[in-house]
Picture 1 (cartoon, rainbow, N blue to C red):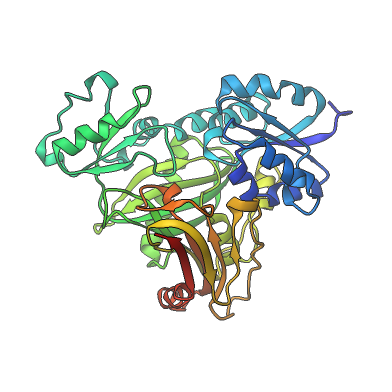
Picture 2: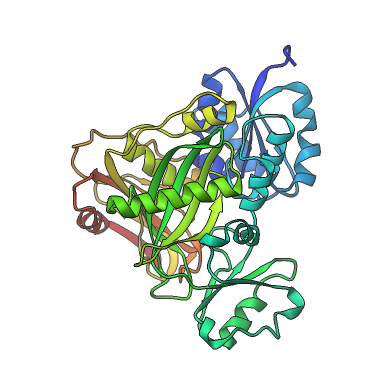
Length: 429
């Protein structure tokens, strides 16, 4: 393959490709071709428009292949022509749907990656429960034919119903009665695995980790908030990186995550795992993913540490020794509450407003000095004009978010509240 151009093969859909576009500009900067596999959910016309615009970061993509399904059976024959024309040096899944085929392909080609075993486990919440029972709540998998008759002892309520293979909180429901349980199970598709779990209590966090050669080389704890206290859903409403925690609690989460990744068998790459930390200090795993975190968490770590994470992710995919600094500021993405109605506009006094869903362009976030004052960097709108805003049932129902950072010792809650008052979401009721 020495006479073929060297390349990195990425897998993901348009929304995550646009968000992490620095991966492709960095790939080209290193003299490698950026190849991408997308699923049928990607609008190829929009993607090709971005590629044709020389000012757009996605113009750095060398070739794009679309597959009907984000699975091994669809991806492997589709990439065969690419493997004949390019010397592929690395394989990376940018988004959740392609984690398993990317992991399997990297293994097959003898390249760094999470490993086929870890990739399969990370795409299936039931396999995660089997893999790390000591960090799992009580759970039962309910086959489709048993769901209408399934009974849960009264002492097991409240519980949570989860489709085992979905993501973005889709289909996750809290249930307190048998009637609610049956209704939630009936909403899970027949071909999906339905998990019924004890509802874990405690504060919610995610731990992002960089893994190389089976060793965790960096960890960061992100504090999460959701709408679970005011609804039956678990839609994430804020991320704070790093979490403002006593060192003992931070260490408990980091060490639990290290053990989870060891047992799951992650070899190389970035991971995103979600946990509950109980008042007794106990750590319960919600789920673990072998891919980049969602929302703007990668940007939050960039603002917090002062360095972008995409070059490090390429190092991991290519087998180049990697490292990443510790945070010296605290950053937050705060999803704003919205009125119900058709979205007309979003305005913000003195803060840049970006619409990535409209033009597939994300703002560039410039890290500040550690002692710089609190700064509202951007308001990101995740919906299109005319979209109807209502209850935030899952991640796709949120509308706009604020990105802000401040020194580690600042009152970030107060700074967030002051910045949020400068934003208005305008709707036609």
